[in-house]
Image (cartoon, rainbow, N blue to C red; front, side):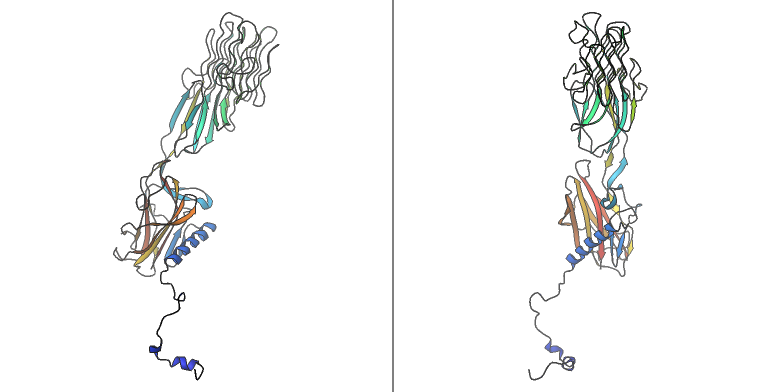
Length: 468
């Protein structure tokens, strides 16, 4: 070139000379949808870290549902805000339904029970079994204890329920001791949650100790003592004269000379042993099964077993009468000690729970004013498949309004990837909203469908609506 290009040359350049193509990679992008989506996700993070109720930008609104500020609750249906801190979300539900009561009776075996979906807390009411009768008219079995405890659970998990069996009465003669009653307990995968102690078996002529409390009651002393002592929450009760102290089997038992069980040698279903063990000598009055069982008796009664309720009610029985028989959920024929020539009554477990009813959701936002009447919009939603997998545009749908009341036909969501385990980014890009009622009052509406507890539960964590 003869001369250098100067500013003067450029000012005077003919526009016809500005032709041709830019080299590959230098052309500006014309599709800004990816940038807009990334902007929305960044805004989600900012809103979350600052715990904002609603985050508004120019011609865009983002809501992470820290509260219900951005929700038009009048026109939404079944919306429930759940979660905590940065993990809050909205799902469909009606809060608590009517309480449901499940009753478990003695079977002599473990009873696995699956927590229904939507249930987060269960109230336990447990009664231990009564001890069997001993050799004389006063040798009644001890009554079973009672506990009430609330436990935190998750829908779909399995709890194991053991309902105590009544202690056995004496057989083949008068100088015998009744078996202790089994305790009633609940555990989660071997982790003990709560239990109600069983009553001690009657002695040769004296009553067995009452079950329940943090220490089971001692049996009534006979001639020269001989009573078994109640078990505590940390040790078995001391045995009577010349008899074996109580020890713990699986989850604690009382039993034959304070050890074992009439039905299950490892387990606490029946607690105390069969009368005096060999039915020929005074070697084993049964102790009540509990957190730890009572000791074996001689001619006095066997000791009762203790109960365990970490934060709830723990009530000891009274002599041969079960604890808290006045409770509205008490099951007739439960937990009393055996009267002469009778076995003790079995225990019982009552579980009371109220679940959140999972329902379809209509979630409509409050209005945000646009700078000008928009013709296109982008909708980005962060969802979590808490149970099952939501089918896009069938189980979850989205709509847009620009006048605050008239909504578009359902947008078409596509899955743009994950943002965590079972968490997906749903995007509807460049949605044409020119055909709906005109205005600058921008709203979104989300709906969920086919929602069923523990089968299909869709959680909505955040939503972004942008327009131009």
